[in-house]
Image (cartoon, rainbow, N blue to C red; front, side, top):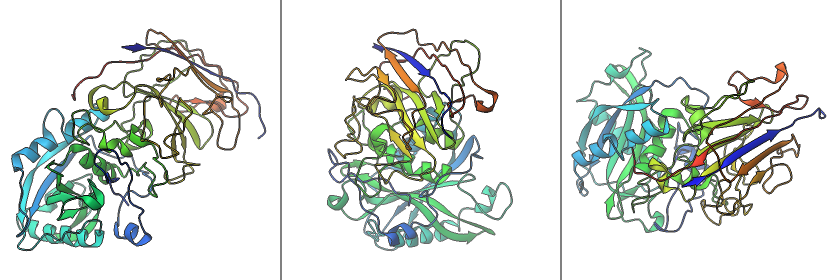
Length: 456
């Protein structure tokens, strides 16, 4: 069991003023994904290619699973098995969301349906126009047996994804698992909108996935990822043009969708990054106040250091427990967020940049999707993060705000803090701000990376 202490000292002085799952082309090693054309992005319709702005998400959302098969392609998996995939107490999509939200969110089982269409599988692959047409056909068929108006909780004539999350499982294969070499017929998992009016309400926001990943049923990661788009409007955090790895395997909305702890890619998806969880409304920030106190930083909690109105450092513990058992390392993960950006397509200036402790920049250079050298202190035993380290705590404009993080070899997992700051520098959330003009001194002690465990 690894134990370490984190000392954070910040001294600021006056200074001049389309929502698709990433592909696994080679189901073992290749973390690449397609380059989307503008027409493909447009066809995705209402997707999570833009940033989330709303946190008005209920604590529970009904989820209806719809299984779709065809004249030439029937299911090889049982409906009961898919029910377990979605709602089992352990290792399911629902248990993942309970875990990543620190039990602040869950799905409610709104039942499962099976629709058998008298047509052949469209074998649409990444042709999202054909996929939308398919979902529209299924919704029209489904409306004869489901009264969708019952889910219009606010009576606005529209069933939103927060009132009913629709997940379609299509018989056949998943194109994102295998890419060009995926068996056929297949469909590419995505989230989009196929508008239908039924029972006096409009609906059509959906998630669709293929039934099979090669020779086994689809794993939960791909479904959880697309639900992140559907219900929470979260953006993709991988690099959509394929020139880098984005956040790599460190979060659900990046390549963490494919993490594995039990031998099948996607069976143990990574926790959402702290920033993503904050967008959903179930973030778990540890506030820094102006009195000395001890704070226990548990997995799922995070500390923020605000560098400016746009840039923030997020420090979160990743200890390899529960679904994070699929991570390739453990320790304190530092993310540099710049809210002026909307995605991670530009590896030189991302929305979220993982500050890799080893300074190798493997994610930016497309060498891997994350390793044990990324968290602090990491396998390289990197004990300092500051303005003169590599990577550094400088802003994207090159400003040195005096942010330094020191990691020690042992600790009691508490934060001992002394904070001084000007009144204009306080934040409602208790985040530490280090804007120019304020004097801030912080000492942070604590946190460890613990052992690995099965899903809970």
